[in-house]
Length: 532
Image 1 (cartoon, one colour):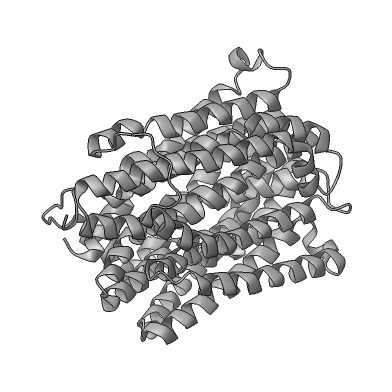
Image 2 (cartoon, helix red, strand yellow):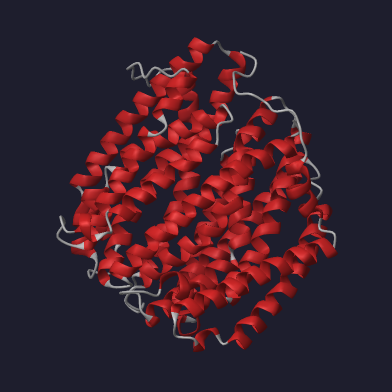
């Protein structure tokens, strides 16, 4: 099986499962928006959920998983089956201990943590209580992330990618009156649903881990060579990913600044969720699929294949995200109105969220590409470079947030934090791409730029068509939801069909690579140890 075929097959599996998860994620967010709108309670919920989620990204899905996969793949190649699973078992229980301590501290010191994040006291009191309820979510999602990393190393992507489905289902269940009536308010019911979903995300992967060979034999070790290796890789990555989470902290502070409209934090959250609908569809799927592959290529010192894998992935993701970004920018109000404007989420909430979406969408291609270029550095065990660039990006984000708040607030309003993040992310990607190219040689940059030029031309024509379609269909004039939905669906389907037709007309080879290669019959590759 060729590397391209392997990436596309894995990404397609992840993508299909993730799309289903994102659809349920939308239903979840729509239910939350319906119950909370962009009220102070919505800000309290977003703040309470964001804090353990930040720690999750720091100690679990971010630094730990990215550090674990290269070490585990090396063990699979070089060690016996018994040594592989001894390492996995000890890391599991060691991680469980560390995260349990963080969880208890987070619950005990919840007031201090929430007040550090909240720029206003409006959401503070309720957010403290909600944060204390939801914080144990961190413990279970950290273990779920380790399970995902192990299964990914065996090229099992479907089940791990499906785990968010259970988080979404649990949260949705707790938004309905039949369950919600047992709690004092909707926000409390929602965070309990999140906690239940976190438990399910871990438990659903346990049978597959056992089937692969994991026995969960108790054992805590901070001196095991492989665990020390993971820790040594984690520390600089913690700083790198920590910088990204500081960016999130900064955006939260600026979103709750004194001059911001009420509900700005909830609006930014929902706009970001719409962005993730696009990122989760294929961009994150490709990023998830290429990390184990690039780790294997780096372990074999096959840097030419690694560079081809990276360049191919960047082109494929650009093919999806560039037109998606333009579509989100032009159709932002119809998108938010159709997706969320119900119940407590009123017209003013739509305008607030659409403005945030406009500026987030600017950075969509860069955000997706960073998720590809950073694992390329990680696969070569270079953790310092992404940290240095992320540090500069952090400073840039702070400066831009201050500039937008102080000098351009009337123009960008609550979209300032989103625009600052977008521009800082572009800097992040281009700096990392240039450094990687200087360090490892040509990446086929001109080839990538030619693809970008064709994709951008097709997307621009599609964008013009979207604008005229939105204007002449009079979307905003229709008051009935069914009519709005039909017009919206027609605009999206028409824009997609036009873009694909233009890509075929201009001979964008990404169509051949995504559809042609993916449908050719090739021999499969089974799971198992790589050389053990």
